[in-house]
Length: 476
Image 1 (cartoon, rainbow, N blue to C red):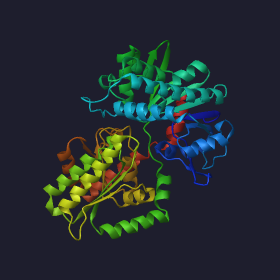
Image 2 (cartoon, one colour):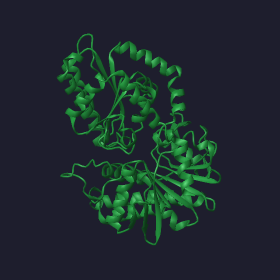
Image 3 (cartoon, rainbow, N blue to C red):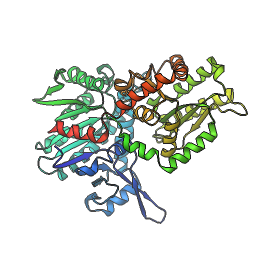
Image 4 (tube, rainbow, N blue to C red):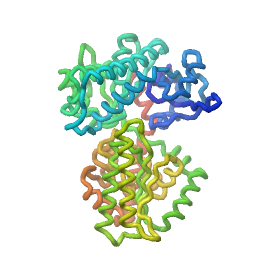
């Protein structure tokens, strides 16, 4: 099933461009989990990656390339086509609809007494989301050879499969959701016609993929409740509008060999030495997140504060490394959340720090080698999202620090695979999370090692290459 052309569509692409003051363009590998996960996969296929131009540098590169094709982009990405979508259209589709509406719905994030509010302005934004999806569907239709396989990624492109189906019924199309899927009662916050359009958009695919059986089940529940579709949960199929879509579950894991190779490089070793100098022989509780509302960083810090209050015997003997990297700062909610994280961290320092002990080290400057160093030194990994499609931090941490304990939210998709050997917590229960911190620190070493070995095995069970090829094989 690995032969033949494959087209991959995602908002963010495998490369990005920076425009210098002198007008020159500098290319670098694109960011984001999808790019990292598929960077090793793309070299194995006759692959064309279609993505959006996200910056002025990207748009400049597109305008210099015939048809936006960057076929020799480098980084083993295969061929790339960037779409120069008008900035205003992109902003409304990406920020207002995808990230401020669909993300909030699937992660159950709304403060419902105040939001959402679907008015005439939102309808204009929704038209931009439709136009954005149409641009991808058109490009895929133009580029795809007869009977090619198309892999459409995530909530940004929920309408593409149905749009593409109308233009190119010969293609085999898959859609994959990297987020959770909202249950019907929460999905029903959306206007009725939008709910139908989103579900029918994904059902335009031959196969709809999800990270866990829980998210797949919620999608099928929505199809049954909203569309009146015929759902076969035993065989994971949804029949609607005269055609059947198969629903797949593919829990993305990590490439253990590649991760360890990167974590053993000199820059990581240098960061490890610096962190050891900073914290001495104290026990380390580590969290690594974006300052994303769903990651629940403030409650995690509050739990650590409550742990310190309840267990003065640990004062001076433990340090919390909290790496909270900026995310979506063009949205006001995210700027305020980053500020709330910093305020909470400062309160912990003010209350507990001494001349020779800083109980908390917060860093908001993204540094991947330093994150890998923190993984390797961790005694405890704290991963407590409100809701998460998977959460690869929960898999990377135990792999790089096999003797560490994992505190994991039961609302993370990773809990389906790792929960038996992690300390599961309710992400809203600060006191229970504080108790789990204490339990993890006093856990007998033999128990930690046993759990760690099982966590590592589960984390690497479906690395990106197999995750991708399994989907291609299932697509047929």
